[in-house]
Length: 344
Image 1 (cartoon, rainbow, N blue to C red):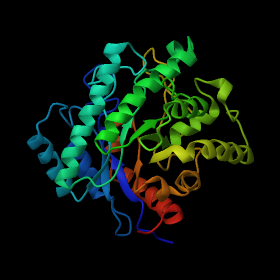
Image 2: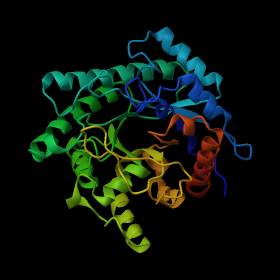
Image 3: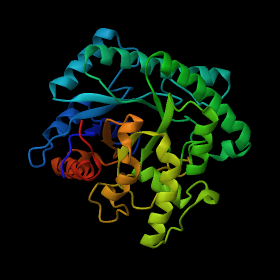
Image 4: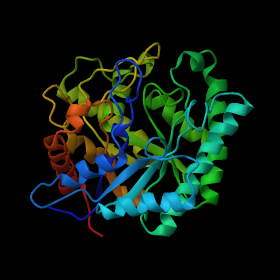
């Protein structure tokens, strides 16, 4: 059965994440090229409805003027898209810094949230953005430092998040914390739940669930004591564990990424293991995308979910430039909406 909601979005950041001019890196893909690749995708006359957007160079100058931001909104709308969730540049080396850091670092983190709220306001008043959240994480890469004093460090991150949530609420926005095994305090399902409860502001700060990252939660990468599954497991064991995890985190989930995962993670230099995405039709993919999505999207409208987004970071440029990649992704997204969606 077909549905009209949730809207289907594609992420712009696969053109940026892992790209650059350092040795071994491929060059970034421009915003306009990412928009054109997304606009060209079509499955039985259906297309993507919108895009989710990373607020950093080279796609966006964090110090862009209102007129420059309106021009970006015009470009996105001209391709036939709405703007949904925005990703705040909270990491060291961008606008922000660690939510677990000292006072100066925490101020930078909050400055990044303020910057994202400002951009959101411009896009909202322009009319290009009518829904979506602002995504954050702890901006503390790796869990070793966190584990030196987990209770104190969790409270420190929660304190920063609480202040960030107040900023968002003042701007009429909601924050969604991304769960991923590389982000301290968000590195397991159990730590994430404890952090969300410690912040205690569900109306202003919730959870952003990604199918690939939450699968690595279950496998206990970077937090073996929180594992719900052995790496080799039966289908029956998988779904029992999946229900356990989603029952805990779904009530907090206000933003959702469709993705695929092969049960592996990858390193980033000296950093801890990080989440890994696979193409939607990767033969090594472990996830039944549609069925997994149904666990997260149950009662989605009651949590304010109006769109879902594909996330496929760290794909080679050749994969991103291949039109069939986006047709396959769109087909998977349509399958999720047909099975799990709703109507206005």
